[in-house]
Image 1 (cartoon, rainbow, N blue to C red):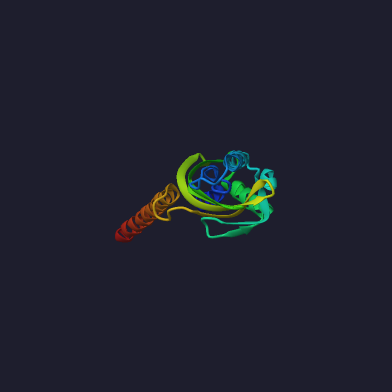
Image 2 (cartoon, rainbow, N blue to C red; image 1 turned 90 degrees about the vertical axis):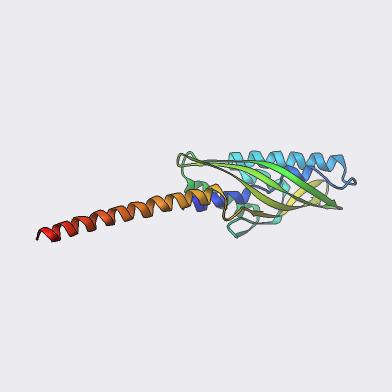
Length: 195
């Protein structure tokens, strides 16, 4: 259960990336790049503090995100609720941090399309998981302010530490069950032979 929840945390990694501050189009102004870099820093801090609502002034009311679990969440209050549920399930003392690493940002008038990776770390139940996600985000200029509009995040479904941990735990669980069944059968057979 906790590994599934850890996967859900990946969902928050790309909203407002510093990639928005880098441009492959020479027409984007330095002020736009600086504004997006500042936005990315705020996002990283909001994630670390568990306070997505602190981003309310830079996320559009109709913003939505599709997280790696395939869930679509609409609006920042729903995203905060989702985040709070995950943190609760991870347990007290858990933490989540993200470092956003941009690939490219394309500016087109009042829209920016950014993509990149995120280095993420989750600590829960005494275990630490580090992994990368890949994301694409759309921002929209609202007056003089850039605001997040749409996000999509993905994680390799086969090669990631969460899946690897889950597979190890399943092996131990099945191995333990097999050992107990084997001991019980052995004990039963031995008892039957004595009778």
